[in-house]
Image (tube, rainbow, N blue to C red; front, side, top):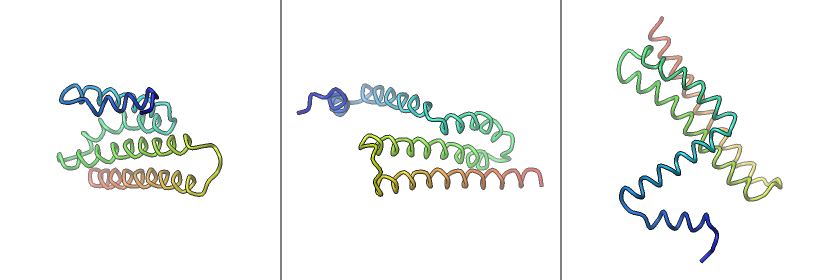
Length: 132
C-alpha cells in the first residue's frame, strides 16, 4: 500500500459511513469550490450568476421558467468545474504536448461553450417571453 497522504485520505473516506462520510464529502466539495475559485473563468461565471440568479425570479413567470433560468446558470458553473478538473488532471500527467491531452482539453472547452450557448438560449427565450 502507498504511504502517500492523498491516497490515505481517499482510502479513509471509503471506510467512512453515514453522516461522517457525508460531512467529509461536504468538506471535499468546499475544497473543490475553492479550487474552482482560483480559475478566472469560474470567478467570472460566479459573478455573472450573482446577478442572474436573483433576476431569474423576476424574469420567470412560473416556477418552471425560474427553474430553467436558474438551472441553465448552474449548468454553466458545473461544466466549468468539470472542465477545470479535466485540465488539472491532464496537467498533472505532464507539460509536454500530446494529441490526446489536447483533445481532452478541447472537448472540455467545447462542453463549456455548449453550456454557455444553452444558458444564452434559455435566457433569451425567457426575456423574449417576458418583454415582447
